Length: 162
Ligand code: HEC
Image (tube, rainbow, N blue to C red; front, side, top):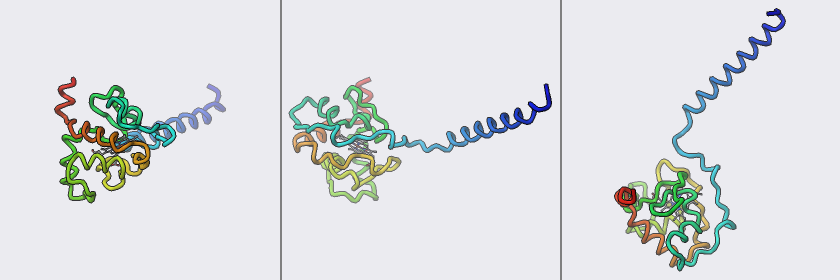
C-alpha cells in the first residue's frame, strides 16, 4: 500500500474508534426514565370531554394513553408517565411522607393529579410533563368517571385481562 494512504487511514480508524466509544458510554449512562420531550400534547389537540362518552373514548379523546398505560383501554400503553394502576399505587402515594396534596381518598388523588399535577410528582417520573390544562378540557362528570375507573385498576385487574 502506498505510504501516502497510511496517515489518512490511521486518522479514519481513530475517529471511528472514538465515535464508537462515545456511543457506548452514552447509551450505558442513559437514565431509565423515558425522555419526555419526545411526547408533547398541546391543548388544541384535545377536544372538550363532556363525560357522556364511553369510558374508552374519554381516555382516548383526552390523550391520556399517549403517556400512560391505562388497563382495558386499547392503545393505552404510553410510557412517559406511570401505569395508571391507582388501586395499587394510590394508597402508596397518599402514604408517601413527601405527599403534600389535599386528597384523602384515592378517588380525590386521581382528580387532584389530573387538574393540579404539580402538587405531587411521582418519584422516578419527569415533572412539568403531565399537562396542566386538563381542568379546562374535562367536565366535572368526565373527571368523576376517570377517577372511578382508575381507582379500580390494580396489578390484579391487569392480570385478569391477560
Ligand atoms: C404528556 C404526557 C402526559 C399526559 C398526556 C397525561 N399524563 Fe398523567 N402523568 C404524566 C407524568 C410524566 C406523570 C408523573 C409525574 C407527575 O406526577 O406529574 C403523570 C402522573 C399522573 C397521575 C399520578 C399517577 C400516580 O401513579 O400517582 C395520574 C393519576 C395521571 N397522570 C392521570 C392522567 C390522566 C387521567 C390523563 C388524561 C386525562 C393524563 N394523566 C395525561 C404524563 C402525562
